[in-house]
Image 1: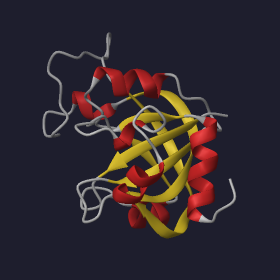
Image 2: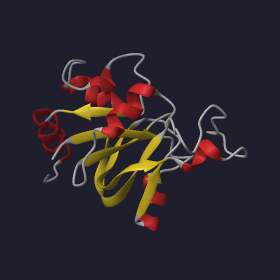
Image 3: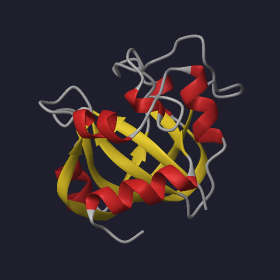
Image 4: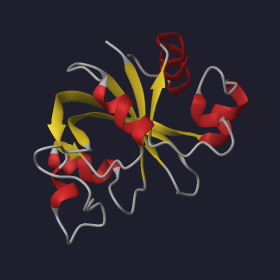
Length: 153
């Protein structure tokens, strides 16, 4: 099992919506590195849900990868903000995964707190200017996150 950190703006799609729905298609990724990270996900991997562009930003919950290798339908929809006219159904550019709500943490682990406990080599999200919406998290860093949150893995 691998760990990931996946960002979403709470006004666009937050932990409340995921909890209410139970699972979601994590679509709309339009960065090749983030797409490649998504392609390397396996069913059973865990992802820290990170509220970005929030005051304060931070980790709010945990998700499980329940389906991978899906074609992102938003790339074909001209009405979507994520439409990609260069992508075709015969050769789609963008993938997505389905994630399920596991739990909301008792407290948010803010970006400021993350910066206090991790350096950028340990946890990429603390690196200034990091904009990728999907980031790998090492096992050691994941265990430290759970400890800081007072949570069990």
